[in-house]
Amino acid sequence: MKKYHLTIFISIIAIAQGAAQSMVDSLLRSDGKIYVVVGTLAIILIGIILFLIRIDSNLTKLENQIKQNEH
Amino acid sequence: MKLAWWKLLSIFLLFYTLIFGMLVPLKTGITDVNPRKIQCGQKITLLAQGYNSLYTRYQSPRAWLKLDSVHALAATAIRVKNDRLMEIDFETPAYLPDTQKVKELTLVIDDVVDGVSLLPNATFINRGDTTNIQAGKAAWSKIIAGTHAHQGIAFPYRNILYETIRNTYFHVPMWFVMFALFGVAVYYNIKFLRTGDLTWDIRAYSFIQVGVLFGLLGLFTGALWATYTWGEPFPMDLKIVMTYTALSIYFAYFLLRSAFESFEQRARISSVYSIFAFASLIPLLYVVPRLAGKDSLHPGNGGNIAFGSQDLDNTMRLIFYPASIGWILLGIWIATLVTRTLLIEDKLFSK
Image 1: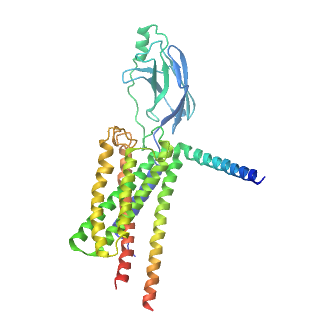
Image 2: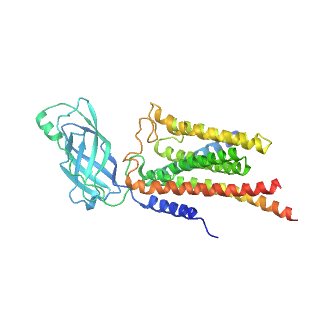
Image 3: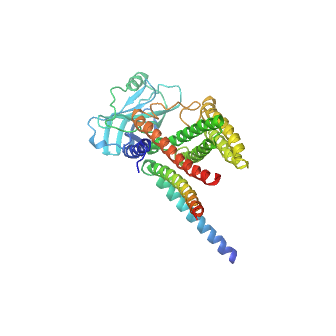
C-alpha cells in the first residue's frame, strides 16, 4: 500500500509543479511579455544584493578583527 | 558624507534608464491575423489584432497585403471593431505574380493616428487557377506610398520580442560592465607588474570579482530573455558558447589565485594570467561570433545584421547609451567597495 501512497504523492506534486510552471509561463507571456523585463530586473537586483551582503559580512569580520586588536 | 560626482551620475543615469526604459510605449503593431491561409480569386476578410493601437480613432485607415517590394494588394474595405480589432476586406485576383505555389504576405496597415504598422508572414496565399492575368496584374500593382510615421516617442515594435525589447537597457549593458571592469583590472595588473606594489593586485582582483558577477548577471538575464523569445534558456549559439569559455577563463583566475602560498608569487602570476585572459576575451566575444559563417541569434553576429534601425533606433539610443554608462559606473562603484574592504584587510593582516 505504501508504494501506492508514494506514487500518488509524487504524481500530485508533479501535477502541481506543472500547473505552477504553466501559470508562471502564461504570466511571463502575457501583456507583451513585459514580465520578462520585470524578471530581468529582479535577477539583476538579487545578484547585486547578494554581492552586497557578501561585502557586508566581510566588513563585519574586519570590524571584529579591529576590535580584538584594540583589546 | 558627500558622494563623488560619478556615483551621483550613476544613480541619475540608472533612474533615467528605469523611468524612460520602462515607461516609453512601444509603437503600434499587429500581433495576429486570421485566417492564416487564403486563396487566389476570392473575397476574403482578414481579422487583424493590434498592439498599442487606437483603431477607433483612425481617420482614413488604409491596408495592403504586400507580396514583395513592387507587388501589393490594396484593401477594399476596413471595418474597425474596437481599438485592438479590425476587419479588412480584400478581393484577391485569380493571379499571383510569383512562380511559387504558396507565397507569404505581409499585412500593412496605415493611418495618421498610429502611423504604419506591419506583420510579416501575416497570411499565406495559395495560387490556384490563373485567369484574367491583366486584371490580376493591375490589382497587384498597388504601390504602398505616403505612409505615416508614428507620432510621439516610442520604441520599435518587434514581433516575438514585444516589450522585452526593453531588456536592451538591462541585459546588454551587463556585458559592457563586465568588459569595462576586466579592462580596468588589466590596467591595475600592468601597474602591479611595473611597480611591484601588492595593493595594485588587490585592486585588480576586486575588479575581476565584480566583473564576473556582472558576467553571471548577463548570463542569467539572457537565459530568462531567451526562454521567452528564442524558446530555450541556453540555445547553442556561438556567442553564448564563447561566453561560457570567457567566463570559465575568469573562474580559473580565482582557482589560480588560491593555488599560491606566497602573496608575491600569486600576484605576479595571476596578473600575467589576467592580462592574457583579457586579450582572449576580445576575439572570443567580438571576433569569432562575427567571423563564423553560421548565423547567430544575437544581433550583429554572423549573418545577423548589427544593431540595425529595427533593433536599436534613435529613440532607443537615447536610453541605451546613458544606461550603459550608468551600469558601468555602478559596476566600478561596487568594485571600489570590494577594493576598500580588501585594502583594510591587507593593512590589518600585514602588520
